[in-house]
Image (tube, rainbow, N blue to C red; front, side, top):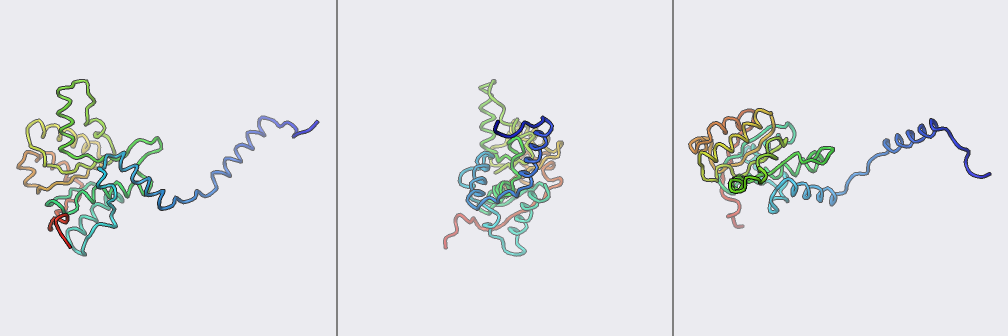
Length: 230
Protein backbone atom coordinates (compact mmCIF):
# COMPACT_ATOMS: atom_id res chain seq x y z
CA UNK A 1 0.00 0.00 0.00
CA UNK A 2 1.48 3.35 -1.01
CA UNK A 3 0.77 6.97 -0.18
CA UNK A 4 0.43 8.84 3.06
CA UNK A 5 -1.52 7.36 5.89
CA UNK A 6 -4.96 8.92 6.35
CA UNK A 7 -5.20 11.70 8.91
CA UNK A 8 -8.04 12.80 11.09
CA UNK A 9 -10.38 15.64 10.20
CA UNK A 10 -9.07 17.63 13.18
CA UNK A 11 -5.45 17.26 12.03
CA UNK A 12 -6.36 18.22 8.44
CA UNK A 13 -8.10 21.35 9.73
CA UNK A 14 -5.07 22.21 11.86
CA UNK A 15 -2.72 21.88 8.88
CA UNK A 16 -5.00 24.04 6.73
CA UNK A 17 -5.11 26.72 9.43
CA UNK A 18 -1.32 26.63 9.69
CA UNK A 19 -0.95 27.12 5.92
CA UNK A 20 -3.33 30.10 5.98
CA UNK A 21 -1.47 31.69 8.88
CA UNK A 22 1.88 31.29 7.07
CA UNK A 23 0.42 32.85 3.93
CA UNK A 24 -1.04 35.77 5.89
CA UNK A 25 2.33 36.42 7.51
CA UNK A 26 4.11 36.68 4.16
CA UNK A 27 4.82 40.29 3.13
CA UNK A 28 2.64 41.66 0.33
CA UNK A 29 4.87 42.75 -2.55
CA UNK A 30 4.60 46.50 -3.16
CA UNK A 31 2.87 47.67 -6.31
CA UNK A 32 5.15 49.23 -8.89
CA UNK A 33 4.65 52.81 -10.03
CA UNK A 34 2.82 51.83 -13.22
CA UNK A 35 0.37 49.61 -11.33
CA UNK A 36 -0.35 52.37 -8.82
CA UNK A 37 -0.91 54.91 -11.58
CA UNK A 38 -3.23 52.49 -13.36
CA UNK A 39 -5.24 52.02 -10.18
CA UNK A 40 -5.46 55.77 -9.63
CA UNK A 41 -6.76 56.48 -13.12
CA UNK A 42 -9.20 53.58 -13.02
CA UNK A 43 -10.68 54.65 -9.70
CA UNK A 44 -10.81 58.30 -10.73
CA UNK A 45 -12.81 57.23 -13.78
CA UNK A 46 -15.20 55.25 -11.58
CA UNK A 47 -15.58 58.27 -9.29
CA UNK A 48 -16.63 60.41 -12.26
CA UNK A 49 -13.53 62.59 -12.61
CA UNK A 50 -13.43 63.92 -16.21
CA UNK A 51 -10.66 62.53 -18.41
CA UNK A 52 -8.86 65.89 -18.62
CA UNK A 53 -8.32 66.00 -14.85
CA UNK A 54 -7.31 62.39 -14.14
CA UNK A 55 -3.62 63.28 -14.39
CA UNK A 56 -3.76 66.04 -11.76
CA UNK A 57 -1.77 65.46 -8.58
CA UNK A 58 -0.82 67.55 -5.54
CA UNK A 59 2.84 67.47 -6.57
CA UNK A 60 2.00 69.21 -9.87
CA UNK A 61 0.13 72.12 -8.29
CA UNK A 62 2.07 75.38 -8.39
CA UNK A 63 2.00 77.10 -5.00
CA UNK A 64 4.40 79.81 -3.87
CA UNK A 65 5.17 79.83 -0.12
CA UNK A 66 2.67 81.99 1.76
CA UNK A 67 0.34 82.33 -1.22
CA UNK A 68 -3.38 81.61 -1.45
CA UNK A 69 -2.43 78.68 -3.67
CA UNK A 70 -0.37 77.21 -0.84
CA UNK A 71 -3.27 77.60 1.57
CA UNK A 72 -5.55 75.93 -0.95
CA UNK A 73 -3.09 73.05 -1.32
CA UNK A 74 -2.97 72.65 2.47
CA UNK A 75 -6.77 72.64 2.64
CA UNK A 76 -6.95 69.98 -0.06
CA UNK A 77 -4.39 67.82 1.75
CA UNK A 78 -6.44 68.19 4.95
CA UNK A 79 -9.38 66.57 3.18
CA UNK A 80 -7.21 63.47 2.72
CA UNK A 81 -5.45 63.54 6.09
CA UNK A 82 -8.14 64.88 8.43
CA UNK A 83 -11.41 64.09 6.62
CA UNK A 84 -12.24 67.82 6.59
CA UNK A 85 -14.32 69.56 3.94
CA UNK A 86 -13.17 72.59 2.00
CA UNK A 87 -14.46 75.33 -0.29
CA UNK A 88 -12.12 76.46 -3.04
CA UNK A 89 -13.24 79.82 -4.41
CA UNK A 90 -11.70 81.98 -7.09
CA UNK A 91 -11.65 83.03 -10.71
CA UNK A 92 -11.31 80.60 -13.60
CA UNK A 93 -7.98 78.90 -14.19
CA UNK A 94 -6.63 79.17 -10.64
CA UNK A 95 -6.42 75.41 -10.05
CA UNK A 96 -9.55 74.68 -8.04
CA UNK A 97 -10.58 71.65 -10.08
CA UNK A 98 -6.94 70.51 -10.20
CA UNK A 99 -6.91 70.26 -6.40
CA UNK A 100 -10.36 68.66 -6.22
CA UNK A 101 -9.27 65.92 -8.62
CA UNK A 102 -5.93 65.51 -6.83
CA UNK A 103 -7.79 64.77 -3.57
CA UNK A 104 -9.38 61.71 -5.17
CA UNK A 105 -6.08 60.73 -6.81
CA UNK A 106 -4.29 60.81 -3.45
CA UNK A 107 -6.98 58.74 -1.74
CA UNK A 108 -6.69 56.21 -4.54
CA UNK A 109 -2.88 56.15 -4.32
CA UNK A 110 -3.18 55.37 -0.62
CA UNK A 111 -5.64 52.56 -1.32
CA UNK A 112 -8.44 54.34 0.50
CA UNK A 113 -10.89 55.02 -2.32
CA UNK A 114 -12.90 51.79 -2.10
CA UNK A 115 -13.97 49.69 0.83
CA UNK A 116 -13.66 45.90 1.13
CA UNK A 117 -16.78 45.39 -0.97
CA UNK A 118 -15.59 47.58 -3.84
CA UNK A 119 -18.19 50.29 -3.41
CA UNK A 120 -17.11 53.78 -4.34
CA UNK A 121 -16.23 56.01 -1.43
CA UNK A 122 -15.77 59.17 -3.50
CA UNK A 123 -17.72 60.88 -6.24
CA UNK A 124 -16.85 63.86 -8.47
CA UNK A 125 -19.88 65.78 -9.77
CA UNK A 126 -19.94 68.83 -12.04
CA UNK A 127 -22.91 70.80 -10.71
CA UNK A 128 -24.39 72.09 -14.01
CA UNK A 129 -24.25 68.55 -15.45
CA UNK A 130 -25.84 67.16 -12.29
CA UNK A 131 -28.71 69.58 -12.63
CA UNK A 132 -29.15 68.71 -16.32
CA UNK A 133 -29.48 65.07 -15.26
CA UNK A 134 -32.00 66.03 -12.59
CA UNK A 135 -34.09 68.02 -15.08
CA UNK A 136 -34.15 65.01 -17.40
CA UNK A 137 -35.87 62.95 -14.70
CA UNK A 138 -38.82 65.37 -14.71
CA UNK A 139 -39.97 64.08 -18.11
CA UNK A 140 -38.97 60.50 -17.23
CA UNK A 141 -40.52 59.81 -13.81
CA UNK A 142 -39.20 56.22 -13.72
CA UNK A 143 -35.57 57.26 -14.24
CA UNK A 144 -33.01 56.87 -11.48
CA UNK A 145 -32.56 59.94 -9.27
CA UNK A 146 -29.00 61.28 -9.87
CA UNK A 147 -28.94 62.65 -6.31
CA UNK A 148 -29.28 59.25 -4.65
CA UNK A 149 -25.69 58.00 -5.09
CA UNK A 150 -24.40 61.39 -3.88
CA UNK A 151 -26.37 61.56 -0.65
CA UNK A 152 -24.34 59.06 1.34
CA UNK A 153 -20.99 58.73 -0.43
CA UNK A 154 -18.27 59.53 2.18
CA UNK A 155 -16.52 62.10 -0.04
CA UNK A 156 -18.31 64.25 -2.60
CA UNK A 157 -16.74 66.87 -4.86
CA UNK A 158 -19.17 69.49 -6.20
CA UNK A 159 -17.28 71.21 -9.00
CA UNK A 160 -18.26 74.58 -10.51
CA UNK A 161 -20.96 75.42 -7.98
CA UNK A 162 -22.88 78.54 -9.02
CA UNK A 163 -22.22 78.16 -12.75
CA UNK A 164 -25.78 76.95 -13.20
CA UNK A 165 -28.66 79.40 -13.64
CA UNK A 166 -30.21 79.74 -10.18
CA UNK A 167 -33.90 79.08 -9.72
CA UNK A 168 -36.04 78.06 -6.78
CA UNK A 169 -35.99 74.46 -8.02
CA UNK A 170 -32.19 74.43 -8.47
CA UNK A 171 -31.57 75.94 -5.05
CA UNK A 172 -33.97 73.49 -3.40
CA UNK A 173 -32.44 70.36 -4.98
CA UNK A 174 -28.87 71.35 -4.14
CA UNK A 175 -29.88 72.26 -0.60
CA UNK A 176 -31.48 68.84 -0.11
CA UNK A 177 -28.19 67.21 -1.16
CA UNK A 178 -25.90 69.38 0.93
CA UNK A 179 -28.17 69.40 3.99
CA UNK A 180 -28.45 65.60 3.99
CA UNK A 181 -24.68 65.29 3.87
CA UNK A 182 -24.28 67.95 6.56
CA UNK A 183 -26.61 66.08 8.92
CA UNK A 184 -24.79 62.80 8.20
CA UNK A 185 -21.40 64.47 8.85
CA UNK A 186 -20.04 63.48 5.45
CA UNK A 187 -17.16 65.29 3.74
CA UNK A 188 -18.04 67.66 0.89
CA UNK A 189 -15.57 69.61 -1.24
CA UNK A 190 -16.91 72.41 -3.43
CA UNK A 191 -15.31 74.66 -6.02
CA UNK A 192 -16.81 77.89 -7.32
CA UNK A 193 -15.90 80.97 -9.33
CA UNK A 194 -18.05 83.02 -6.96
CA UNK A 195 -17.36 84.47 -3.52
CA UNK A 196 -19.44 83.42 -0.51
CA UNK A 197 -21.40 86.68 -0.68
CA UNK A 198 -22.09 86.21 -4.38
CA UNK A 199 -23.30 82.66 -3.80
CA UNK A 200 -25.56 83.91 -1.00
CA UNK A 201 -26.94 86.60 -3.33
CA UNK A 202 -27.75 83.90 -5.88
CA UNK A 203 -29.97 82.17 -3.31
CA UNK A 204 -27.53 79.67 -1.87
CA UNK A 205 -27.14 81.22 1.58
CA UNK A 206 -28.48 78.25 3.59
CA UNK A 207 -26.54 75.75 1.54
CA UNK A 208 -23.31 77.73 1.79
CA UNK A 209 -23.77 77.96 5.55
CA UNK A 210 -23.86 74.15 5.70
CA UNK A 211 -20.82 73.83 3.44
CA UNK A 212 -18.79 76.30 5.51
CA UNK A 213 -19.22 74.65 8.89
CA UNK A 214 -16.12 72.64 9.72
CA UNK A 215 -14.56 73.33 6.33
CA UNK A 216 -11.54 75.32 5.22
CA UNK A 217 -12.52 78.23 2.96
CA UNK A 218 -9.82 79.45 0.59
CA UNK A 219 -10.09 82.18 -2.01
CA UNK A 220 -7.51 81.68 -4.76
CA UNK A 221 -6.55 84.79 -6.68
CA UNK A 222 -4.43 84.98 -9.77
CA UNK A 223 -4.39 84.94 -13.55
CA UNK A 224 -6.01 82.18 -15.54
CA UNK A 225 -3.18 79.65 -15.85
CA UNK A 226 -4.71 78.30 -19.06
CA UNK A 227 -4.28 81.72 -20.70
CA UNK A 228 -0.66 82.20 -19.64
CA UNK A 229 1.86 81.67 -22.43
CA UNK A 230 5.55 81.11 -21.73
